[in-house]
Length: 382
Image 1 (cartoon, helix red, strand yellow):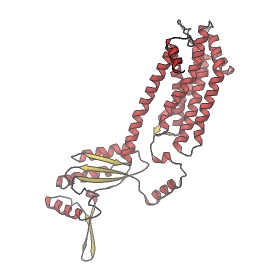
Image 2 (cartoon, one colour; image 1 turned 120 degrees about the vertical axis):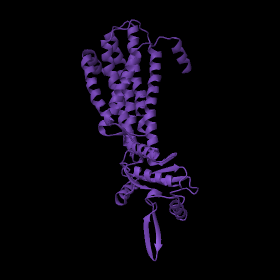
Image 3 (cartoon, helix red, strand yellow; image 1 turned 90 degrees about the horizontal axis):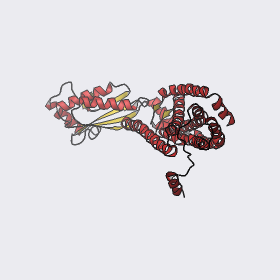
Image 4 (cartoon, helix red, strand yellow; image 1 turned 90 degrees about the vertical axis):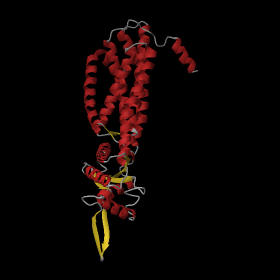
């Protein structure tokens, strides 16, 4: 810790430049970071059931399913033409492997000992054609109640998609294609719809949670230090930690899933405490009459061991998750531990380097001096 404090005191600009270069390097990896909520990311890659599923898909084909229910009167020529257009539009989407509906179903009939197979829907549809199709479908056990509801108010479009495709994109494009072709409400269910919803929720909730955590932590630091630098320096520390951790994940090809999506808030909560100890001691030494350089040296020297032990304990606990066989937990443990390490280095090197360069504040308040807020906090703590 003495080496870190001396480095910050003697070469503050070099330390700041080093952190800028490292942050830019890790930050470039953020472009490769993606969201992933696939079930495969929640199970070990060598799980027998997963290996069997992969083998079955490779041998027999097949993928994930999306079920669309098109609401409206089905048994009219106009509705069946719309269903045909909707089926063709969905089949043309990249990542769609197969589409099944009344529009591409087959009529199978016996004729003098021969099995005749033809399209269920002829090229042109009349009212008489629709009546005949309806009679055939309602008497067919594979079609009635499956491709069309018993009351004729819903038509089903069953879409089989590539499991490796972008589910969020597929769900959006399938919904848009159906809505453009069908003159009525469209209801979606299945893997792409669920995946799209979860990904949208994650993309919406992660920034909200991060912003809320930043606001709460900033408020706590402002109450404690009553200064802008007392708020901005801890936030700078955790910003560096987040960029390094998430950037490393991008470089390594990791994806944020439902478990690892809490990584930013965890790093923010754990990492912000390191700078708290350093700043608290720094302002205490300034209030006691120390010069700016002396206050920085004493702050890093007196708090260094405690901060180091805290970082090692938190980092080791999070790194233990890397032993998990579940991919999402494994990546979360590695990146969270690395983020804690980055926060420790930023609080021990970057923050002291900045404090050395900044002017001594005109108004110095000792954080350890009792005031109304600290007395209230002590009473709450017993």
